[in-house]
Image 1 (cartoon, rainbow, N blue to C red):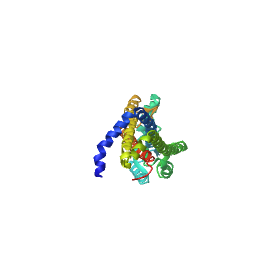
Image 2 (cartoon, rainbow, N blue to C red):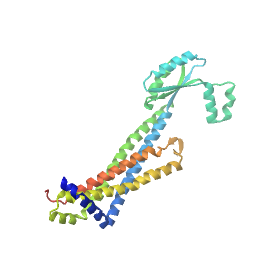
Image 3 (tube, rainbow, N blue to C red):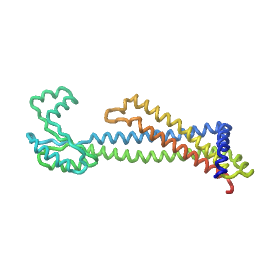
Image 4 (cartoon, rainbow, N blue to C red):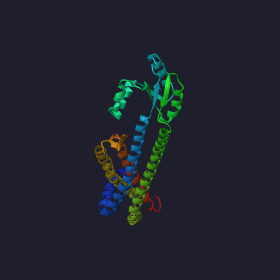
Length: 298
């Protein structure tokens, strides 16, 4: 251990010299790593945005319970308590028929103002759920309760959309893991090829009696440097580029329903993951590639 510590400055110097001596090889390795991590970064942002959008959409899925005309406040409170006691129910909001008409006018135009004198709408309870997949089950239970005229949650189309979003979210993360593994493989292969071109250097050092760790450690340092600078490019694109895109689109993709994930802290998490992958895979890949040409162990 003492010998290793004494040799550290020398090994750092060797790593720096080798990087400068093989600059074209260093540049191509860093560029290859950057491309691999860029692909992983894009897929990571895509998956996080899909998850964020689906969560936002699921929050919009509610059950609207129309109440019998003339229902007393006591019965409304009793019905609300019964619904709140159901599993998966988060909270309930009451909306009077006047509130419903005003919202309809606001969303659909003044043409509905003619109904202010004789409002045909119902008072409603708006039920928010913890789990949107329970829409149909909870709706069936509420529909059987007293003082309920009808229950509306969107029908089979909404259930199909919920199932579709669940599949997209699940397979989106699976695809991200696959792309991350592919990026790791590309980084390892790139570094392996870079070390392979310098196998003669390794053999010469081995033949003059250099210890295995003395040969391997500078290559591991180089791999970490490759990984660091290779990760730096996609990290800058992730933080600055995504922030610019978010501002340009005002945080919305096509409609108010599809909201983009805010830049922070999501981009920070992805950037840290890219940096860790670059450093660790660069270090381990270089070490394994260098040890391949060590014919025996001291």
